[in-house]
Every structure is written in structure tokens, then in C-alpha cells.
Length: 113
Image (cartoon, rainbow, N blue to C red; front, side, top):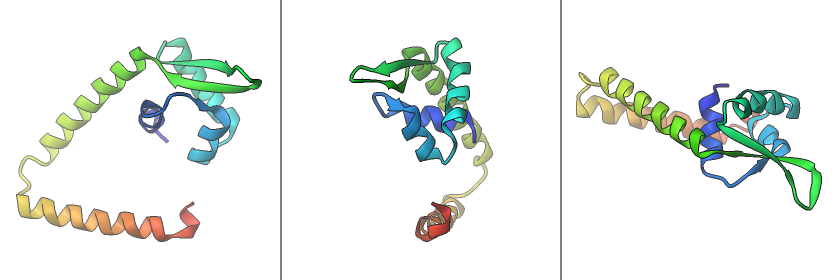
């Protein structure tokens, strides 16, 4: 799993517990803890204890993390635009319909959860 998915998920939330993140991504809490440590040291996310339950560790994105995510998104967008530059509107519409059908099928599959 790429870091981008974690950052994208954290971007839209206040703070998430390590346990919630582990459950969401289907990984262990220790995986999330190790992942977070790298980015805490870089100042991209911060860890804090929940005020009413000090056992719970919360993770939130910092402003530096949001700026980094925006820069990554801009690079991804430029890459995709270059990649699809010679694709016609009709071909793109077909691709979107196919990907939407695949996404619906994945959502319907219980084993994917």
C-alpha cells in the first residue's frame, strides 16, 4: 500500500486512531505505528494521545503534510494528463465506463472486504 492512500485518507479527517486506521486499511496497528513514525519525524503528521483515554493514539496530518499531498497530487495530475494526451474523448468515456463497472463489481464482492 502506498503512502499516498494513507495521506489521502487522513486529509479529509480531523484525527484518526491507530486502531481505526489499521481496521480501515486491513493492516495491523503496529504497521500503522511504524508507518506513522517515518512521517512524524518529517513533520508531515503528528501523533497525540486522546484526552479522555491516554491509551488511544491519534494521528492527524500537519499543514506540511497537506502541502506535500497537494504537490504529489499536482505531479500525479500532470502525469495522467500526459499519459492520456492522445486518447480521444470517446476512448476516455469508454475507459471510464469500464473502470466504473469494475469498481462496482469490486464493491459487490464480499471477499474484497
